[in-house]
Image (cartoon, rainbow, N blue to C red; front, top):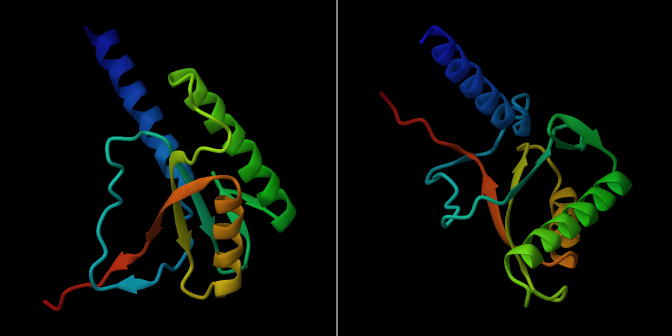
Length: 140
């Protein structure tokens, strides 16, 4: 019984750790009055891109240059296309990918950086976007 409990605790620690690696906690997100959680519409496929205050892209806490980010998005899009083809044989390379791209940008990020990542994603057939922000704290 003790062995089973230990395995469950280990499993949940690993699951929580993977989610935490996608988020860059050093970022200062913009504050929005009506921020709400991302609606994944039952889909599990998400691509989270962080843009920090040093104008760097980060994915899983790994910094990327502009050129590396372009290659990463292209590679991720190809992996998503393969996964979709495995699910649906009629999926074509020209079809839009159902993956939700979540962009977390620091409040001091210039719009040109945000625009660049949006364009890269759109060029690779990503059409579902979500932006992360902090909800305004309500006065006590």
